[in-house]
Picture 1 (cartoon, rainbow, N blue to C red):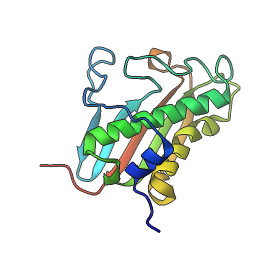
Picture 2 (picture 1 turned 90 degrees about the vertical axis):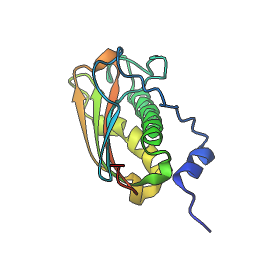
Picture 3 (picture 1 turned 60 degrees about the vertical axis):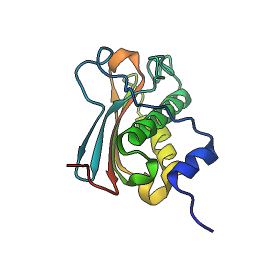
Picture 4 (picture 1 turned 45 degrees about the vertical axis):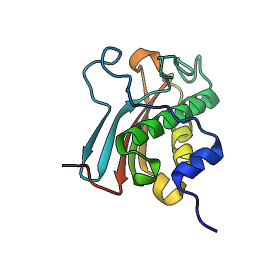
Length: 167
């Protein structure tokens, strides 16, 4: 039995990956680019749980207006957005050879300490799509006071790809 590719896993899981041919940067977020490639390393700009129109998934603060379960779902939603930006940057999710690092930021109350359990929403999705060897990254999770636009979650992602960036 052949192991399914990441693109096949996306289809099996029924994930709807956003098309980032026109990334939502510029006016909404300021002067930044959506990703940077250096050799085989792809670094993505911060991704949040927003749809293409800027509607937020579970805005607020975990431990106050957002439950840990909703935070987990917001992180998972954000991970799907990450897949869209990876696909835009390199053409196919099948080009990813390793998730190198993620940094997860979760807006929480000062008392909330299970930040990693919220962030697992993203990491779990990456493992579901890419498998344990490729999809599991080194990771850090931090509870923060505020994020852009009132988002509850943001992730910074670095992956390694099969081919180096074009010169």
